[in-house]
Image 1 (tube, rainbow, N blue to C red):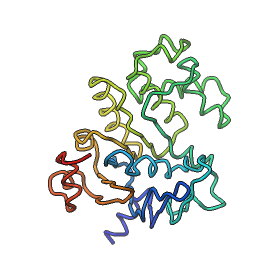
Image 2: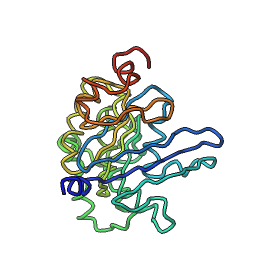
Image 3: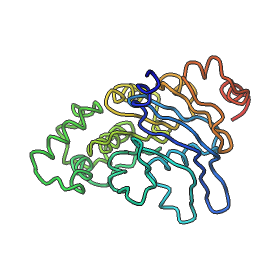
Length: 258
């Protein structure tokens, strides 16, 4: 019964997943279960497949012509590769935040309402409510509430990244993918984003790629170590960092390579 109960908490189930760019195999037989309302960190050296894996979860790799996959990724027990699966709906359910802040060259207000408008929301009062709620969720409302009609490009780097997170959650996703969201930020902004991730996990399931070992240890519940496209180790973060099963994991965490 306990196993059944635990399985109810699995949002994303990856089974025997392989991914190719043309003849190059970027991911080898990945098996992983992503739990609801947990932060899962993906670590490993550059080029090991972390971002490729992340982009597979909301099918962003479909945009690469020479890409192909084998195996399954199930969202709530339904294959995201099924011909019946609506890819627009998939990307509404699974939001994404990129490495560098990428606000649109529009006002702060227009950045937030962009997604809701695409999905058909036209009511001005509802849009204003979405803007306020989203900005409050990322602790940015008090900083920008008097300049919603000013360009988002005028914000600091840290503010821009929080705005991008607010933009992602404005369409009410259930899962957030974050590809090194603090790598371009200063330590104070990084700390704010880390606090925010911990706060957001009450409402979202979060998968984050990070090169920062300390960050993975601080903010994640589970850690997945990738090496040359292989998932070498996956489990509880504290155990992974204090008592890794795999020698490669230990060598990477202790700085022997990477």
